[in-house]
Image (spheres, rainbow, N blue to C red):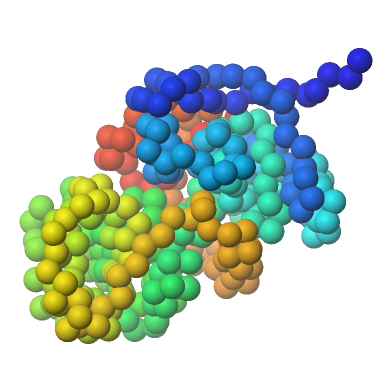
Length: 329
């Protein structure tokens, strides 16, 4: 009698607080057509993980119910139709869920090599945020060299990524954050101007010092929505990727019309595979070389064992950390 290989993972016992994350055993996944199975060494923790744990962000149909949208490790198995990877290759990838486990099956075209000089912990912090920022800020908002880019929450996972990418591609970067320690991180990453939102009004600063912003990344929502519109230049693009202060707000749309603003937002997990493949290809050719020459650097705040996923979620919910949180198997 043949037994199915098993693996350890972290499950959501029921929607709720971090303590609903519990160890479990499940069958090891197999590589379907176009997939690779990654032996997970590290997995990044992201905002969607917290939302799914609370029951607010259900996985797409057919996706794993396990958390974990980005991993790094080595290839353990290759499915039919995959020709550009070999068993044992170091790899990082954007998953459709399932990363909080010893093994995960991933679409091979959503994977990237671990950049030279980076370890698996650093590599696991890259896919979710880099796919997100590249697709939203560069592919959709089309940030151009010499444009003014305003990013809120500059010391967070998305912020640290977008500051570095925007600077690498020639933009003028204005970041908001608080307290001082987080503002210092934004400066160290290359932001041209950092605004402590407890001490200065970002609308006044951006207008007075930069003539308003051409691209804005907001993760705050709530009252920031109207203020972003005020801080935006004519023909600006505003990208909404989260809403820490609320998703519902009453806004005067007249300035949106008069300034010809584009207001957009997205979630990554539900995007078609072909779109994610396109993003991966652009990252591989345009962004990954910047890790190898030292232009870009991962920002990892805390590393914990996978079994301490509840502690990692609690830390992230306190919102005082800078950079990414990574779990190791």
